[in-house]
Image (tube, rainbow, N blue to C red; front, side):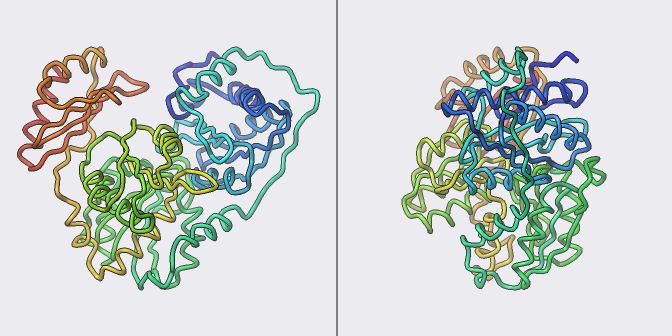
Length: 455
């Protein structure tokens, strides 16, 4: 079939299965990945991790991917069903040369895709290998390697991952708690079962736990508030201390207070900044350019050094590595640790740190987060526009009296409000994130920007 070249995005490959691409492209991707990595490493022998999520198409795509990798001469380490953080851990912890995860993250069921990394789970993305990989795949000039590769099935990865993550916490710091967890019938269940086996003092109430690529309960995207509503209600109904939600491939994590309030990811990030700066005084902390301001406020107040990045998990990870940031967080719920073996999302460590911090505080979760709720956020609002870049230029001109940055789209800062408008990588959309010192100011400026964007 004819491939839709737009599936090659800034952070990964993603599209509608059997519409934008199929197994033929997946086979070529395996071949192209080997060609790229051989060129980069200057050697023929490669050990490549392959994993998949629970989507209905993932098993078939994984088989085609492995076929391409093996016929190109790679030694494939197949870890089977695994979350993206588990996949990253496998590549980094065991010292493999890279890997490919079959997943479309939080997208609806008809989508699927691939996340590619180098050794130490270093990302392949825009300006960092994605364009070369795309060109190799679309050219498709492949012939079988003189020496075929092999496939080894590897088990026990999640147990090793949990053991490594538990080294970051003293379990005695976590008091008896009741936690409701909604994994949206997706990959978070694969590591939470193993993690909480080591925390008998925590009662876990499971929601939407069985792996099901049709997503029967709701979309596996906790960034959309509507997908958090059932968890919020269940936390209150159970009298639980908090709730946890993960997305489709479980590399993003979100929290809910005991009174059913979804915690804004920017607030979670600020809490984590304080926690990790207590462990690494003076460390550099990376965060994406979207509001909220509580993150740099907290970093500076805690004696750290803030560094701002573009939006995108591979982009923030690359900058964290480049600048030596210890912790990095996106306001979409990606939270990274830059560890000796690699830099990648660590939702289990985040869970442990939040549980320990809440336990030590002796407070209800809603009270614990209050000091971090200083600002009023619009949430991310998407608008369809004919020419996103022309509209960004118009916004830049209209708000010329504010402090501006064009790191990612246009960011404008005033004393009492600030906002970022950036274009989608794949659709004719503009994404607005605005924050202010009051609810009234936020609503006023949000509506003002939307009128301009949608005019």
